[in-house]
Each structure stands twice: as C-alpha cells, then as structure tokens.
Amino acid sequence: MYKSELMPYCYNRPGKPLKAVKGIVVHYVCAAGGKAATVRNNFIKNSAVKKDGSCHDIIDLNGDILHIIPYNEIAYHVGAKKYTDFVRKKWGKNAYPNSFLIGIEMCHYDVSAKPTEHQKQVLIDLCTDLCRSYHLTEQDIYLHNDITGKWCHKYYCDNPPEWWKVKAKIKERIEKI
Image 1: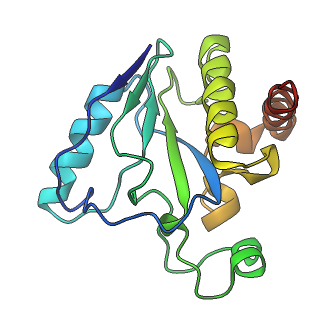
Image 2 (image 1 turned 180 degrees about the vertical axis):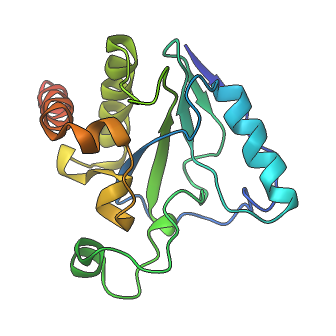
C-alpha cells in the first residue's frame, strides 16, 4: 500500500525545489523495529533542534510505502562534509547530492537490517516506477555508502551480491516495457 502523509514545512522539509532527479539512494533506518510513521515523526521532532534528516519515502516493516516529501522537493538524506570520489567524478567537486537525489529509507526487524522478501519486492517496484518516471536506469540507484561513505544500507553493504540482485531485477523490470 502507498500512503502519502507529507511532513509539514519545517527544517527537515524546507520546500526547496529539487533541481532535477539524477538518481535514487537507498538507506536503512537507525533503529531496528522502527515503524515508518515513527521515523517520519522523528524527522519532524528533529527539525526543532535543527538536526538534519529526512527522505522522500519510507518502506515500512509490512512493505507499505509512506511518502513524506514530494519528489520535486529536497530531502536531507545524503548530506556530508565530504562526499566520495564517485560523487566528485560523476557530478563535480561542488555537487550537493540532496539537490538531485531521491531518498528511500527502509525499516528493518533486527540489527542485520535485512529486508523481508516483501520489502525487497516493494523496493524493486518503487525504484522501477521512479526510474521509468525520471528516465533513470538501475545504474542511477545507489546506496548511501556510494554517496557519503556511510555504511548504509547496512545489509546491502555487508552483502553486495544481494544488492546486485536487487539492481538486476530493477533493470529487468525497466526493460520489460
């Protein structure tokens, strides 16, 4: 199920326009067992103390998608003092990835952050739809680690072949049209 429950305008949803959509970044939430609504509410609470953090979509434990920031607005999901060499080579040394990347957070049951098969399928479906909408390929889907060096999405950083399988399924789905 896809549910839109946009965050109010606040520090973590400033309403700044996304310049363009050049890719999608997959993350995992900090706390095991956290629910999408709780994650959204924490982003709002953290706004009061000006602690950056937000995303466009959250995939809940049951596979539901909670859409919290429109895709044409910036979300604060890949901010860093220093970006990876990959970012500098691909988009330039002054790139600010939040201004052109969509962020997806994934809830998880335990410290491994391993998504359920259903969550994985929802991620594949969502990324496929976004790729089609914004003329992207599976090569434009990244882990947080690719952008900032942060070990996120933990499960996929720990298990690269699993991430490659997800991207291969997305490629297959994009090409099916």
